[in-house]
Length: 180
Image (cartoon, rainbow, N blue to C red; front, side):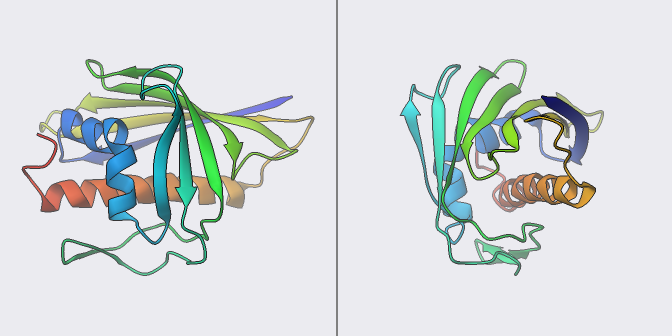
């Protein structure tokens, strides 16, 4: 088994509590609303959203997301450029609303194959000096055998995650009373 780990950081002017509530705690409600052409539904097939829960994200399919996304009549450039087909399942390892940390693993569906066993994410939202957020995400990819991911595949995955984060951030900027 091969293991590849990398860390990304993103800075936002939105406080950690709002980003955590929107992108983690209420993502099962918010993401299908913000990205209806991509995400059909999000449901918990085991548990209530806490540690041990399994969340299934069902993709709408059939549409390439590459145009600016409209959120409440505002235009925001989305970095997501791929076709959503099928589903993914996330197993939640930890969710801490006090420390704004979230750990989960992609265990089934899109992204899991005979070459990739699982992908684990460790996300932490920290206060920045300007009352915003420093979002830190460590991604660990567990591969079967000696399979190695190409740099373009890694970068595509990073862009997808950043694109989702940017959509939530844009929504929160446009709606200052949401998730307060």
